[in-house]
Image 1 (cartoon, rainbow, N blue to C red):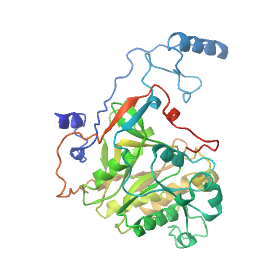
Image 2: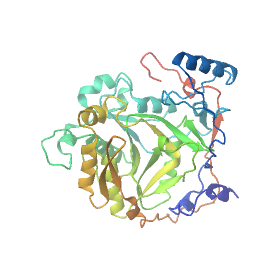
Image 3: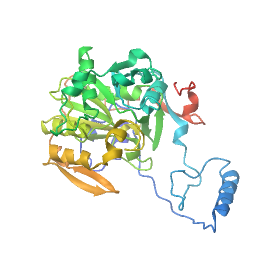
Image 4: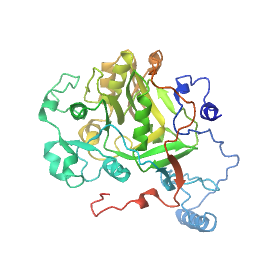
Amino acid sequence: MEKDNQLSFFSADHNNHQEEYTDLPEYNNIDEADAKITLTFKFRNEEDYLDFKEQVKSKIYNGDKFIDGNQGITEKQSWYPLNKKESHHIVVDKKKLNPRYPVYIVSKGRYKRNPTIITLQRMNVPFYVVIEKQEYEEYAKIVNKEQLLILPQSYKDNYDTFWKDDDPRTGPGCARNFAWEHSMQNGFDWHWVLDDNIESFNYFNNNMRAYCTTGACFYICEDFVLRYENIAVSGMNYANFCHRHEARPPLLINTRIYSCLLIRNDIPYRWRGRYNEDTDLSIRVMKDGWCTVQFSNFLQGKMSTQKMKGGNTDEFYDPEGTKKKSQMLVDMHPDVTVLTHKFNRWHHHVNYKVFKKNKLKRKKSFVPKHKINNYGIYIKDIKQHYTNLYKEDKNGNI
């Protein structure tokens, strides 16, 4: 019965190894019905609107915020009664799990505000930060010095930017290669490498994206990949790609993995390219028959491209836009990638269907029990914003 509960919502189109989602935490998201009745109010001026909003907030919603500030100024909407607030829901972890493999944050120019550092500090997840020498003193103000790894210049000098031009910029790939080698030198078979603008990690279940408070999400993802012989790269999907009102398979096999990656150390690849190096790595491993796994049961709250100063935003996207980064991927993989223009900027489109032939190979040592394994985690409503659980010093450190 437990097995049926986990698989019942998958359509026939999702034959992409969803039978492999077993012995894992409950995943029970459904397509929720749209509103049956909608009501429109019109206001002659802003003063009338603000008066109406305060009246409704106090008398109908008991003082709770009922309009999302991200909505357009001329078109607001809300549910009655309100949906449960995701920010009030956390993942309780009885076992206090943490990743078994090292976690690296690659960072540049974000020592004043670094969402990933703050997030992992909240979760008590051990991590390293790979930085450039000139920024050491600034980063030492926000993390312990033993967590800082200075990128050797040789990794920048020897990095393959793919395009042979006079541009001295490398992008973050050389720092990612250093993290890879560092983990191997310390005897690890896998490692995590994260972007520096991730604001949260979430467990997605029962149409609720609850905030992880420990490293259980990393540990459980590791547990899954270790069941198989041929997973090269895996990682968590973006939270803003998994809307809480929609059903979505918990696993997607053979697609791009980005921003939060768990990488098998003995695969014969390294990072390359000035742009889109995560998508390039995913494509290269799949072309050689390896599998990738994107998790949607656990999510990363990644900030949108170009929304935060520092990193690639300052180095690439603000001065030159997004066309070059998309064009590079087309040049790397013209057989599966095309350049498109949508949402007022350039994008690349990759045909991942050609990799459906890559099948997961389960290790003989793993014998599934075909039941839910929650690893001691569950979602709890704490009746307040989850960040209230943490105390920050004057510099914003946990």
